[in-house]
Image 1 (spheres, rainbow, N blue to C red):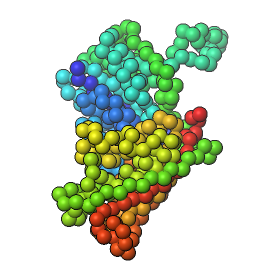
Image 2 (cartoon, helix red, strand yellow):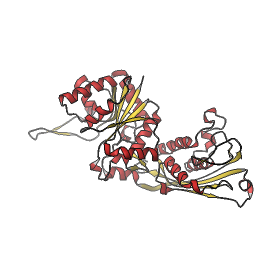
Image 3 (tube, rainbow, N blue to C red):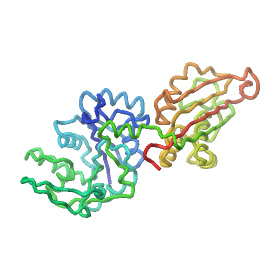
Image 4 (cartoon, rainbow, N blue to C red):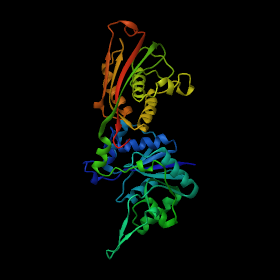
Amino acid sequence: MKCWAIIVAAGRGTRAGLGMNKVFYPVDGRSALGRCLDAIERSGRFDGAVVVLSAEDEACFAALRDREGPFDIVKGTAPGGETRRDSVRNGLLRLPEDTDIVAIHDAARPFVSAKIIDATLESACSCGSGVISTPVVDTIKQIGDDGHVTTLDRNALRAVQTPQCFDYRSILKAHIRARDEGLTVTDDAMLYEHYYGNIGLVTTDDAAENIKLTTKADFDAHNRMEMTDVRVGYGYDAHRLVQGRRLVLCGVEIAHDRGLDGHSDADVAVHALMDALLGALALGDIGRHFPDNDPQYKDADSMKLLASVMGLISRKGYAVGNADVTIVAQKPKLAGYMARMRRRLAEGLEVDEDRVNVKATTTERMGFEGEELGISAQATVLLYRKAGIK
């Protein structure tokens, strides 16, 4: 079963009033589109994804991939159309012919969960369509052409979101027919319903969190720091320098005649940072989460382990306020690598670079660092509970 995703990011988002396509605007330090692609990739359910973009945003997306990516799940882009229907059709035409199921998702919904993705895909596999929905909690009034107001039974109503998943060939045929016939629709579920009848509505216990970022207030609500619950963590790590190993610090490979010895890539700076993050929420240490006797972590990329820790931090309802890392090494000199190391950590922590500091110092040839036997690192972090999460 081959599953692909189409990420619709061609809108202008004028209601957000941000002066730019809102999907490139940061949400807790990471763009909405970047967060969306992270979720698609982390789900492990897709063979690839196509991002639908307007021509003027191609350069922005290339820059985003350099800054936040690389987003290996993205196998190509498609041009935006005059309408959302046209944009989705362009994306569908870029998918491989052997695609079985396609998930169509708005980039403006960056908080989609693996549970939602699983539920919609499974529904599409079983009945041809799977659309995430939530119960309506407000009383809904319908106004007729003559001005008469009717109260609808909210128990029979559902608000639909994305992702919306479909049998690929069926939804492609529906889009082709809709364009030929000039059918106007507000989402793909409406189009599928028009040509094939009933659609598969599903819901999950976290569907209410799958919000769409529409106005600037939506972005502000997620970018606001609540200082009522702040946590501070401290981490320390040290590894021996040995021949035959790469030297990796803060996710950046450093030119040196020796590297750090360890079960993973032995990135002491990232290890100290992970311990600080885990310590801030009393979640143990990296040895508990990534045991050094587990084969799956042999030569592991510590930045990927950091992504796992950040997922845990986010699920607990917290985000990074700032981080400060100190690397202690007599050699090599690290000044030329500082900007790249800072950038890599900011990406891993999902914050702007001005919230991350990286320093390097020597011990004036005292101790194991000064004797060039090893390198150590220390890190402190501040975490805060994200707005609206209790």
